[in-house]
Amino acid sequence: MNIAIIGTGYVGLVSGTCLAESGNQVCCIDIDQGKIDRLRNGIIPIYEPGLEELVRHNSKEGRLTFTTDLAEGIKDAPIIFIAVGTPQSMNGSADLGTLFHVAKLLAKTIETPKIVAIKSTVPVGTNAKVAEIFKGAKCRIDTASNPEFLKEGAAIADFSKPDRVVVGVRDSHVGEAFHNLYRPFLRTERPFLVMSPESAEMTKYVANAMLATKISFINEMANICESVKADINDVRKGIGHDERIGFQFLFPGAGYGGSCFPKDIRAVIHMARDYNLPSLLMGAVDEVNEQQKSVLFNKLKQHFGDSLANKTIAIWGLSFKPRTDDIREAPALSLIRDLLKINCTVRVHDPVALNNVREIFGDKLNYSTRPMETVEGAHALVICTEWKEFQNPDFSQLALKLSDKLIVDGRNLYNPDAVTLAGLTYDSIGRAKATPGRT
Ligand SMILES: NC(=O)c1ccc[n+]([C@@H]2O[C@H](COP(=O)([O-])OP(=O)(O)OC[C@H]3O[C@@H](n4cnc5c(N)ncnc54)[C@H](O)[C@@H]3O)[C@@H](O)[C@H]2O)c1
Image (cartoon, rainbow, N blue to C red):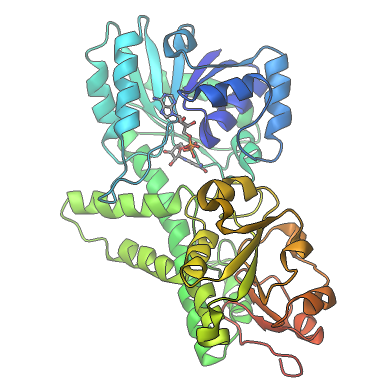
């Protein structure tokens, strides 16, 4: 089948590539000429494990093409996906400007009957508004809502073997068209769920609201653990074996970031406000998260007091989570800003996100491609992202290099005994601070 995808970002590129991999003819469309040129040359604008190989393979086979020409890109496609960004606007709501702009362009451009699916995360009622825009088109355009649940860092696997596919439609033939399209990905009896567009739109927000709530919940509990001298890792085990609770997504840290949770939680709050409904829980989830983003800076401040100003701090991990170069709303950025404000020297390392961070901070930071090089001349090391390569460092080397012999671990990667044995002080989340000779 011919498919067009408008918006070739994390979601559009992964979806388009995986649909091409299952035998479809896919055209990915974007307004960013540089991005399209790079993709045509096999250069992938984002880091996503496995994506480069799939893009190159499907481009070579002629199943995956890239263009900035919307009319040309959608011409032969009976199904068009919209996957443009829906960032947070000034008042906290989702900014739908780009999405409506694209819908209006489609209404003017489309000349034969088509289905347009909204893959972007959008507030309830957006599908209906897009359907209204399409009433002015030359021919019938059906709308569908097909929220995307892929996780950056595991996006190919998530798209290819989804936990479920959700499609919101008003007409059963539209649902059938998507069932056919997704059939190759549902072979292990994964559920294909058809519902109203409103329910599909809401499903995406409710999923993210639940996940963000879990993170803020465990972070708040971790902070209490720390004060009452309990260990959140033990507590986690103590609760996780209860099948009603489980272990997934209950890891304490320095707060959630990324392009989805922060803006989606605020969009939910805004949506509730539009209907004069309270959203006390989501407000708290957001507030807990904002505070948690300061937890690493506060730990450094506790350790160094006023002398933190002018110290050199090394940071490992800048992306909002491992296996991606996405730094949108990453907790590491909050820490860097706080440290720069008080004149600290900041040395940073990340396996793939250095260039993105350089675009924001330029020469205000010292960048290093090797973790051990980053800690040269630093007083302390802070871990912001749990990349695999940080999990088993040589602690004695770190003790030699860090002049204040301090590790602040925002991801609870290490066994405190192993760290303190090397003569380092270890401060993590929701666990007692461990010092050499006394853990
Ligand atoms: N990133 C994720 O992990 C993820 C997961 C699920 C859902 N989502 C949702 O999917 C949507 C897209 O997210 P993303 O992370 O892929 O965004 P992104 O910012 O990475 O990509 C958006 C792309 O749209 C392009 N674009 C902007 N205006 C355009 C136009 N007029 N015509 C064509 N292209 C245009 C941009 O150049 C960019 O390449 C958002 O609503 C997001 O909330 C994201």
